[in-house]
Amino acid sequence: MFLLHFLKSNLFKKLLFYSIFLVFFNNFSVINAQENKMILDDLSTPGVTSQKQNWAFFTDGVMGGLSQGKAVISSVGNENCYHMTGNVTTENNGGFIQIRNQLKPTISTKKFSGIYLKVYGNNENYSIHLRTALTMAPWQYYKYSFTTEKKWKEIRAPFNEFKKSNAYQPSALVGQNIKSIGLVAGFKDFDADICLSEIGFY
Image 1 (cartoon, rainbow, N blue to C red):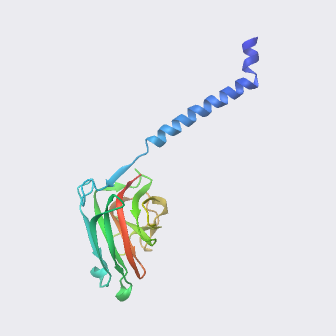
Image 2: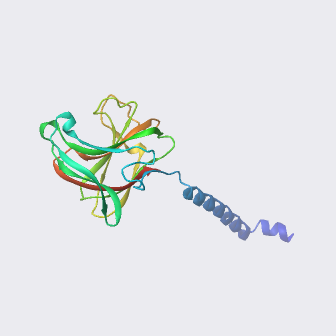
Image 3: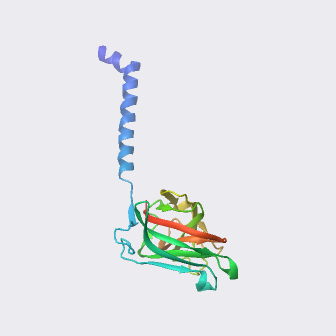
């Protein structure tokens, strides 16, 4: 009789609820701790990614633009980084400088939620550009913009928030394989100054 009375009591119901809650919470914590993550580059081997690919710097000069700049391996605030600086101008149909890396093998957007990067900047806006097999023209890419601060911070760019640059490409990035990734300063007249210490997928 005591057992039957206990099973019907409010105390038993509360204990059962808390037990279920703890099981759920513990499982959720394990999932978070095991978040899928791939470090593409943290400057463990400066200039070369974990895929053994080199970074390349270029400007809108390849399209007749007049922007100028450079990218060097440096250290800012005790963090090793790629330091990209330059003067971005929209004159003569220009408007960007960037560092870009080819992904070999390509990265499936089905395996990760997005891209993370650790940056330090000059309070200006920058963007990540991704290209896939379906972005064949130079002006086709997927873009995610963010604002830097004069301190190191991590940016998270979900794949489902990237915007296409051209009407003649699929709207959704999710489901495609990424073949290149670029850190871009552009699309207005300004002095670019940004440092990248780590980049990868989460």
